[in-house]
Image 1 (tube, rainbow, N blue to C red):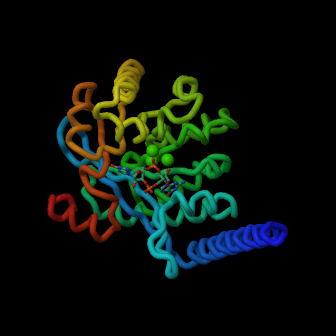
Image 2 (image 1 turned 90 degrees about the vertical axis):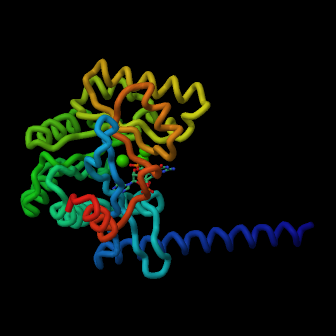
Image 3 (image 1 turned 90 degrees about the horizontal axis):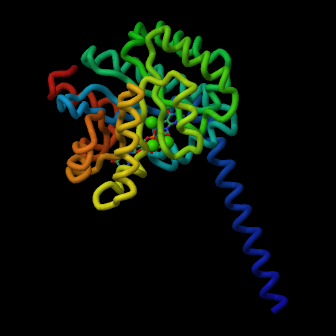
Length: 275
Ligand code: C2E
Ligand code: CA
Ligand code: CA
Ligand code: CA
């Protein structure tokens, strides 16, 4: 028994050690990847249900790791935040995305996700505007997405930042709506242009009374506050039918395709005469 215990202890330490080693390899890889441009923008279509038109894209980060393959942002964004490279990573992705988006039809918008770490930087608005000016990209075609969970601290700073971005014509969405714990007070105190309903309420929509009630209520809330709504995670026609009962939205999700890199996106746009 004693020997067994020591074995367990040994294995525990061994797996801790390999986990730590993996983590530090990831950190090194991310730092190097940021420096060498391994992070690339993918694009997810956004459709206006009222017209059926493609109206823009959400940029979603991917890491083309030479050793690990294509890596999801859920893995590398939190690490990039912790090791202090998120701003550099995000700015280089936005710069690439602006170059891509400039080749698209001028009606199409570009939406990007912003980390709470970036929002804490008092120079964030200026940095963003500089990127737009350098790319000669109209701010009116540009939108940022901020999650509820990034708004706990420094509401005053965030409010003045959002206001100065809006004064330049950039729109600001409240992302992952409904998953935080102070959604409603944030809607009242910050001048958002749009609400994005989190996909956890959407993928469960068919046959789930609770999800239907929540989506319906958010739709009513948006209507009452004069805020347009984007619904993410629309995977099939059944969800679309449900949504049509509640109002009219911008939608995105696998029903319209998975996020694609710049070249595939351009190919699709060419077919639609939107390039
Ligand atoms: P998000 O902003 O909520 O983005 C939606 C996520 O849902 C994306 O995952 C997208 O690929 C996925 N998705 C789209 N349609 C469907 C669908 O029909 N069904 C399902 N099940 N999923 C769908 P992705 O690309 O893995 O991104 C995950 C999260 O990473 C994003 O969530 C966003 O919060 C964050 N993220 C992505 N790019 C960036 C970035 O450049 N900066 C920052 N700070 N965060 C980013
Ligand atoms: Ca988003
Ligand atoms: Ca979401
Ligand atoms: Ca999210």
